Length: 178
Image 1: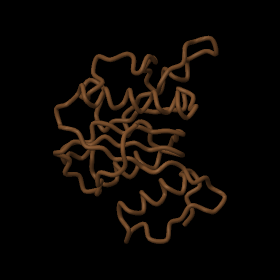
Image 2: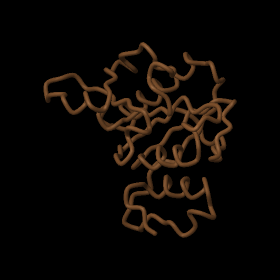
Image 3: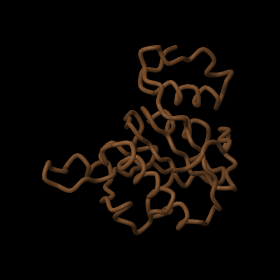
């Protein structure tokens, strides 16, 4: 009944995705408040807009909030070559590395942002999560997949969904992007 991984605000958001099923799930008082969850909507084919939004979020987290780049994880329901970051190896001036490669980084290497599919990041967590390319109604954006991706965030969660999102998890637009 208690979620220790997520902040109070992320736990409340998760509960809002399915109030009946997740009724009674709480973050204990010892868990930090966290940032309000932000859900932004973009046109389904606006890859440039999504990249710009991701870059703004990363810059805000690192510059304004002091989050270390390695504590930011970018997740997608789709492989990188099928999403808005296809062909990109940097975002907001930081290297983009997949999860496996992030474990190979040395102390002297430049800071990097982790990127992975939400399925491969299952069971892991990160202080800040940016979930992007949430579009259509494929299995990749079904309720369980979205719940899993959202529950990876410990402190800050940003979701970039398209106007054609028709997945089974309610993701109402809320908050403002930095």
